[in-house]
Image 1 (cartoon, rainbow, N blue to C red):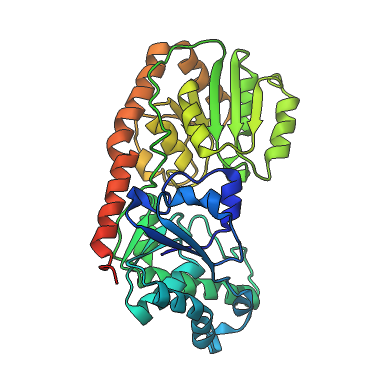
Image 2 (image 1 turned 135 degrees about the horizontal axis):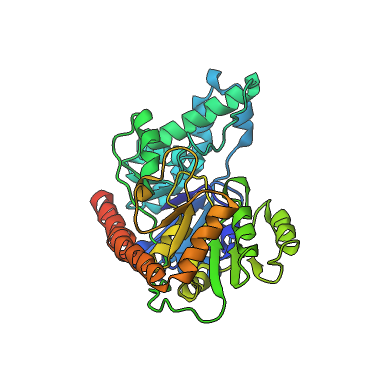
Length: 387
């Protein structure tokens, strides 16, 4: 059984799912996906996420009325009542293991199933909420209702994390958050990426314009405006930006009004299969991100052996990249991006060496084979025998 807080249809539309995402190694012959939304995804499209397994999708929608209530006086019974349909579902389907994606309503539901039925669950955590808060009001001077909202989700989150048989943060910068909350059953498990479509870049020679790809959601903390300005100053460079978000319109306008109007290409949505196949054809991967994470798009570029240019973020460095010689670090300024791009564009040997170092480091640490093997070992460790 897989518990998710997502609207699965949205992910299907973006083409972000990779084969066997919800059933790594096709370990299970039957998979029940439970979403805490009212979403009804297309089962035929979703089938690839579980391989040959029989697929079932269920809904246990979150109840926003519980959040707005003064839950501190009467939270136990309403939350238990909300979770009961999920507990009943698990009683009928008898899963050997529950996998939870994130510490949200789905994590609380897993904790209730475990308490009622003893079914083990492992929970993957994909952000550090102390750094990138979700379900939180963080502005100064919170109202009483906002404080109640925060307290509710802190409780729900804590129940999912503290009762899990294992918490699996997807990168090391999440560990301080878990340590602060006293969560000790922890193993870092990096995302399993798209093995059938990831390919190594073997030819670093330039053919035509110098081609850069930038992948990521387009919002303030991942805004590639300075990358666009740098490309505008380099006439023989083309930039493809893959992603969508609230900054897209302003970035498109910036590109149109720059000297790179015909050389900056926006692709709001690219299926992950296609993206992984395209990566080796680019000369460089460049990105701006202030997130304290080793995100999927950077991992894909490193695993493909692309030379990577990434900014030094404000705050502590990403642990996996601290002091790394397999990426080129820049400041988030036009001049710094321009200098790095120009250096790598003009020095074929340096560019190839950077890409090969990236590939050599990434394969033993983050290859799909390595990460899938670890997750399968964990699943086998905790799963119950078939009922």
